[in-house]
Image (cartoon, rainbow, N blue to C red):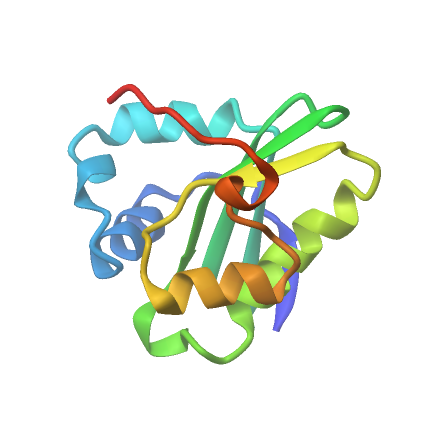
Amino acid sequence: MEIREYTEYREEEILRLYTEVGWTAYTKDMSALEQGYKHSLLVLSAYENEELLGIVRAVGDGHTIVFVQDILVFPEKQRQGVGTALLKAVLDRYPDVRQIELVTDNTPKTVAFYKSLGFSELSEIGCCGFVRC
């Protein structure tokens, strides 16, 4: 597996990835998703040969805050270290950033995954989060 910057937006593989993981709210407006990718702070991909395994996308200023916007791994490639490698690559890229944040589903599996990589729930550090959708 190779982790590399995702510099060329390939709509077909992005559509397939988002669809297979069930993130279809994003795929309703593919032009907006493409713009999101083009204006991201960082997009990293995991490939095996030329097969896309997963993507992580970060937004922010890269100095005081990085927000992990998307982390997706094809279902058949999950639980094989792909997501871990992608997230660790982001953390390695920004070792001195004060806050690296993300929002995820509140399931035991996802909570355990992020805690295993050193993340804390906001409530554990005396904070709460808000979102406007």
